[in-house]
Length: 413
Length: 157
Image (cartoon, rainbow over all chains, first blue to last red; front, side):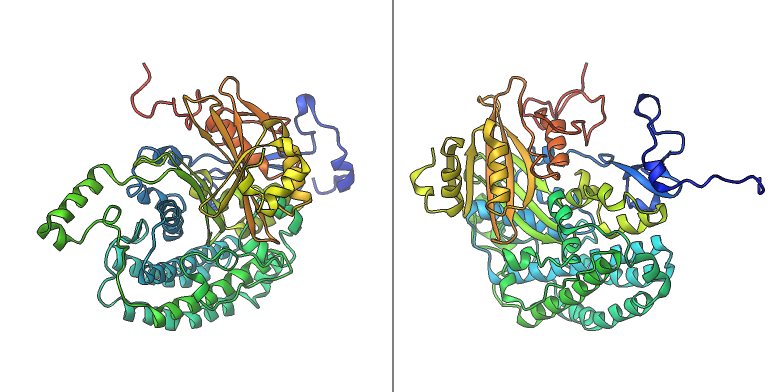
């Protein structure tokens, strides 16, 4: 074989190659089916890649393997029950989803949430952002070949999951935010626990950075890879850290503050290089900023009630329910038929770790939502994949799609 | 016709100046502006909002089934202007018999998957869409689950 000359083929000649019969790829092209069980797709994404040698000429993403009809299921639940569905959409950021849903329904109800509940929500959502970015960083690094980062990231993630467990009794499907406030009173000793974690966390981020930022293999695999123009991204519905890595300062926490984010002092990190490395830098900086927000929330946590004064919406305290007739009636009504929400429609946007998370809720005045649509960031981000990877090498596909940071549950719903 | 009380909102009056016939109705509720657009004019209004009013982002396209009322479907578009930090909701009412509306993929390429999702789950066809296939469900699935007359319990006999 070795002395048989392999003919040189220029990329231009292959691009002009006529397709085979029935629109199939010509003889020089190969179709590669990546997924739906490929480990680097973190779930069940299938990519149909048309290759010329190692260059991607065409890409067709195929999603829907995790579609569970959550939007339809919302219509069967009452408003309070539906909180548990939102956890399961983006299972790496359950509290962000809880928050989006609760804010949307509270906007429909016109409900005022007490400051302590708002601050507690901010604190826990920022811990969720750190947790989600840690999973992303660990798995992204493992895809590119940096094995040990994963172990460091999951060490801190475990601490955060333990904090969630302390608050809600659950590690991942927390459902800790309820319409009108929180599900349970914040547990005894939460302050020391969160403080201990967040004081140590910035030095942990330094550890990750010392493993990666100046690592020649890491920079070689990520710098200049996965570049896509800002116009393309805006046009295709990309949001979140990907836009910020392209220099656009867009963040719903600053632009359309919710849940008293306007009271916190933090930066929105941006980069202009717009490659996989820039997205890594943006997310690492976001972890530091989230830690800042958590610290401020710890220091300035207002005292007072942790759920709204709205007996027709919020379940009464156990003690009251057992001693007061009125509280018992409200408890019975809320548990058996839920509460009615005035007619109307809202679109509530929050900044999830992945980008713009929007809840479009339509109410017809009954105790069940008439229609719920989730504008999930992963769905929009994933849509840019063909533009992102066509023309790059197949080895860079892993790095590029990893930098999108999608969760397939979030995409397929 | 734009309702009188919506003239104070810059976007609403800009759309009215551009094409007064396109607006069927409108509302401002809970801080959110909704404009109901005649289905035939949706592409030109979207183009105007994107290029003239800087609504560079299409957040999402979805639909609401008002069964058994007619026109049965509402196709809902959420637009976002990054520069002005504003959002607007557009709505088109579509009749239930063979529902179809013009696709806005010519304005935002990102509408592609959102319209495929609406086609898949509601059965609304988008005319001049580049790749109108099911996206969530298998290709041989029967029915459109997010329609209100789609059964949620029981097995098919």
